[in-house]
Image (tube, rainbow, N blue to C red; front, side):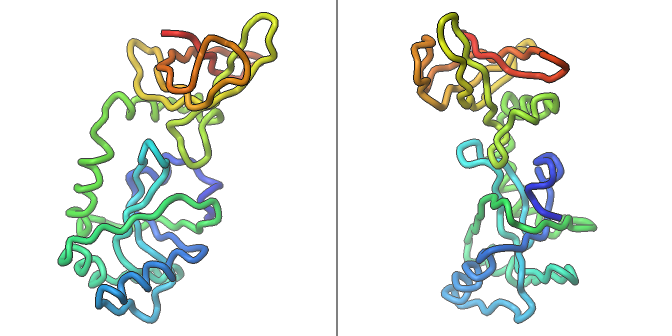
Length: 209
């Protein structure tokens, strides 16, 4: 299964096998420098998926693994904990993904650390549950959505807004792009996003707060 072909919700807060690119090479080199020799079968990583609002879909490296057999190297996990090391990696569209079947309780110490840092903002979490705007979300940064800017006499623009909260069923966020024309909005502005439907498709329109 390719990561770009599945919804971020299928990955979010899940432990998964991840294979692709030069990911494993970098981790092997780093562990060897720390005095730990990865197993010969290591061709992938077991990682815990979370969302960093600044950089998007991310993973906490848990341990080395073999993708086809789903064999995992618990010693590499214990090694990280013993030296208080945290290894992270980001989304890449070419990664292969496979869900861990079974209990992830053995990795609870590291998972709890991630949750405390990235799963504590209830306002942001509520915006991630709105499936009707999934087609507007950035591929690797699901908190960022395309919104419509329109004004009489000006050609419409589609900048990005990073959603930050939902209050009374209204969405709020921060405008990430400076519009090319004078719509009265600027990059960094806190804005209100309103949802509408046209020809059966949901779209988002930018409004001032």
